[in-house]
Length: 252
Image (cartoon, rainbow, N blue to C red; front, top):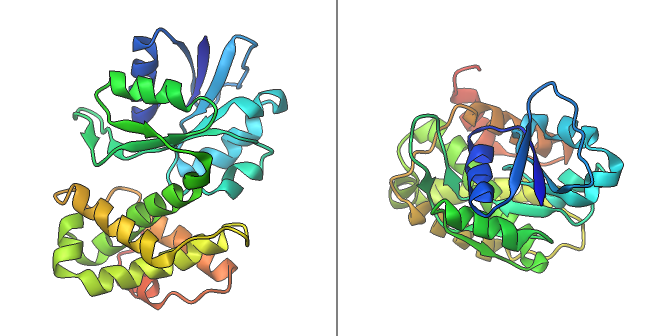
């Protein structure tokens, strides 16, 4: 089996290393190159960043869109359905890999879809904890991760510190921001999707505490905040807590 890797960044390289350890060949496609999967490619791993996802999925040949594997933040089912991708394998990534630094694991990465078992094995080969989850749990897992990353980045712009400190020192403000983000995430889901708000918030708080020394602000924090507010306005939602953070944050 071969895997076509679209966007061989830091995360993609970690997974490629794990796939290689499992005896799977990986063919990288770099920025600007055409995506040309062959019959030998059992899956197409799209590892580009969030801002490049739509373009990458639009470039995957229709015949191969049933083989797509995704690992971006800010995913919801509509992210892939808009491009005719059906039943992808999705990695809800809970580890970081920055250039020149070791892999940092927050908690188990959750994987769902037809190739889930292969990618769980690949991550295990790289000493990254991972578990396979059923499709019925995927949307909730994605929403929790979205609340974690967007919430930590937004709150970090205002407060700095670590995810553990967001809970221990700023619990009320943290939950207020998370509930605004949850409303935005709900607007991106199908109307029949059932989520328990309190359960999602609790799971996100648990994630903040899973690695309490984890930093809150990355290089795309302001971009994530702006994207969340744009989505809120498109859905007709008010976001006073997020707006206050945006107003007090330096321009990009």
